[in-house]
Amino acid sequence: MLIIILAISILSTGCNISSGPPESEESVKQKVVAHLISKGYKESEFNIEVKYYKSGESKFGGPYAINVVFNDEPNVIYGYKYNYKSENKDITQNGVAPMEGKNDKNFKHAE
Image (cartoon, rainbow, N blue to C red; front, side, top):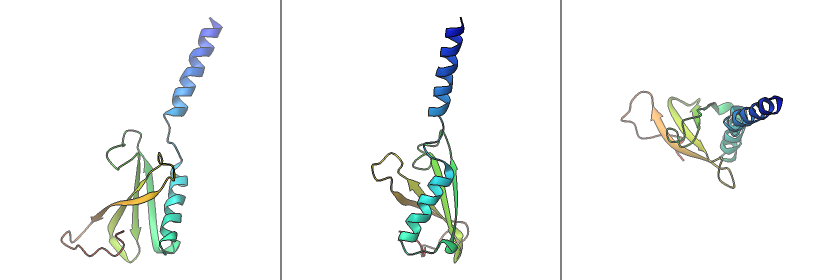
């Protein structure tokens, strides 16, 4: 009986570990910071928000919702995708969402 309980607890612990995020939100945020710095931005020029959604695979182009707002364009949210399953784990911009003036198509930071 003890062996069965032990086996079940090990299996359930293993399932919980594998169902968590592949990387922490902070780790992904630092990768986005590095990507933007490689594009010539300074870390003080933008703000990043990263959220992990276990069931958000198709919603954001991956389980991480990555939003970047640049200080000189505060009414626009730039969406990024973290390709955590790829070999080089690259960061790519996958959307632009103006919060006001939706007719404006002159986005300063579109990649």
